Image 1 (cartoon, rainbow, N blue to C red):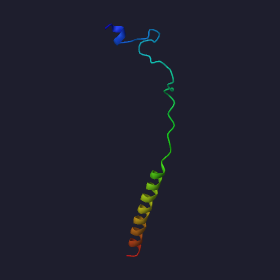
Image 2 (image 1 turned 180 degrees about the horizontal axis):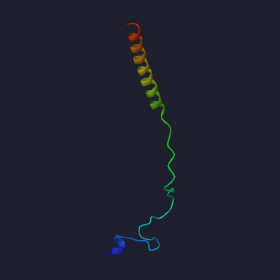
Image 3 (image 1 turned 180 degrees about the vertical axis):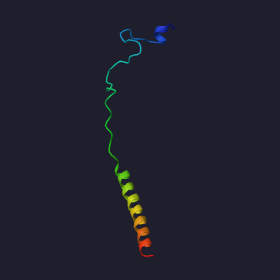
Image 4 (image 1 turned 45 degrees about the vertical axis):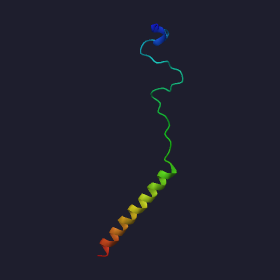
Amino acid sequence: MSDAMTNPTNDDTPAGEKPTGDETPNDSKPERQGPTKARITMWIVVGAVALYFIGNGLYGILTK
């Protein structure tokens, strides 16, 4: 086999540069999706449990 068949090159593309095609610019960041409903629900439940423990502890300290 010849080298051209195993290692194809494009003479129009300078060495070290990638073809531009459909690539996005490097300085733009992809848009992030917001949190899912499951994650929001988990935060609400964890926050409620934390508030319960803090409130219960404060009540115990104040009524002692």
